[in-house]
Image (cartoon, rainbow over all chains, first blue to last red):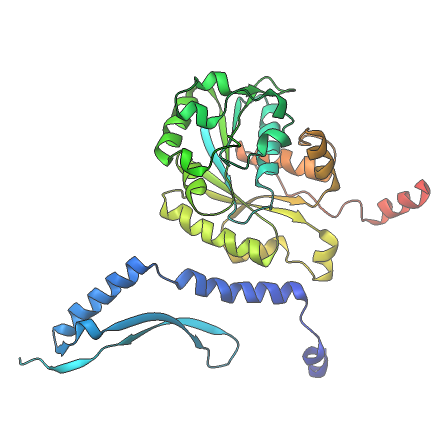
Length: 90
Length: 262
């Protein structure tokens, strides 16, 4: 089959559905419950506080979608905003 | 000692009740002692699909509240004396029963039956939690459609989180022509996406509508859906059965025969 034929051939709706589902499920499966997010947040505070003084009240973490590099979909990612008060004296 | 199976899906309308009725019937046809339990409190349907709606005296909530003994609530099937139905309540809601009560009820029935089949309601709330409480294994019913598969995936996660690890898949309402045209996901697509073992594939069959109209499950009859349910029951009992060829009736000889009927 020539390259032009392959490019011109439209994807069947069944294949579209399958590919959409695979992406949606990656996101669904990664989304954590609030309880787990709270535990992750506390663990992050504990680890970073060993080296850096941070404002733990101001710490925000959330689960978001980032777009894939090749723009064929998005994947879930954890974003954390960690305000620093100063380095800890060793 | 019985095997307690919950039939669940997440999504509504994909065929849980139909599957419960037909799987139960197929097992009963194999001389197994079967108890069907409708756990959809407030929206009962298993009674009507089985054709037993006129025989309800007591229901699941009555038993749990101690108003009657279990045996008084169990309804013997019209055709198979080795199969019983414990109907749900129509005028209560899902908070009327707790998971602990369901577990106790199921355990009380274990001695008397080979198979206990719990027809789970749609959703992931109290009704679902009640239905899975006493179960040993789960059969997930899905159709080859985006919403149903997505919900089934969530249910798999919830089942595993609740300690149910024996989970098998039934793909229901398959339309072979649409799959061949690429307009419907295939059985392989669905199994690949959900990553659980397949235990059955049931085609979309007009006879299901007729069987529900009449209140007579069609398991064991000669139509494709009937044979599919019989095969599922055999696999549940541990037999290895190859998947039905859902395409028969579309082959060359079938088309030729069809010409002569006109």
